Image (cartoon, rainbow, N blue to C red; front, side, top):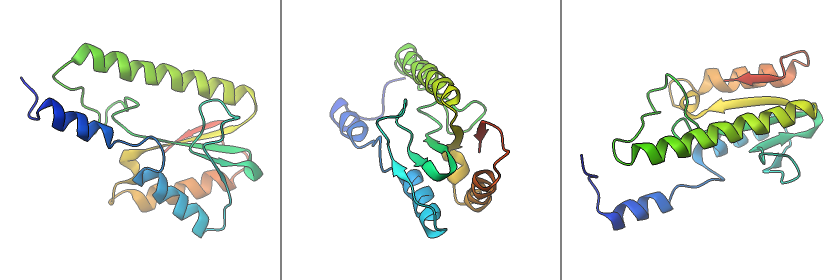
Length: 147
């Protein structure tokens, strides 16, 4: 099936997709700041440039888009019908890079929290953010938590 948009419209739409300061990221940042947390953003000295770094808690937070990072069993991760092979290579490359960065951060002693975009939708956001607070406050939590 052909794309419903022209090449120019599709190009324009894709150019508007941001890598930093996305709505889910801003939501988490406002929540943390409102609860008194201070953090660094996109620290280039750390592998993978985590979205949020909480140095006091030795914790990094990644906020992943379900589509771009291939969130399995999620309704927001649907492989496009056009250029399927290209998209699968792109998304699988993102997943491989994520694993590489998580391994390096784990070896460096960082606690890692991954928040999926679907967990920040209106019906789930409160539960997700409260779980985030519990994980950050609990020093004995696992090295990698997924919300």
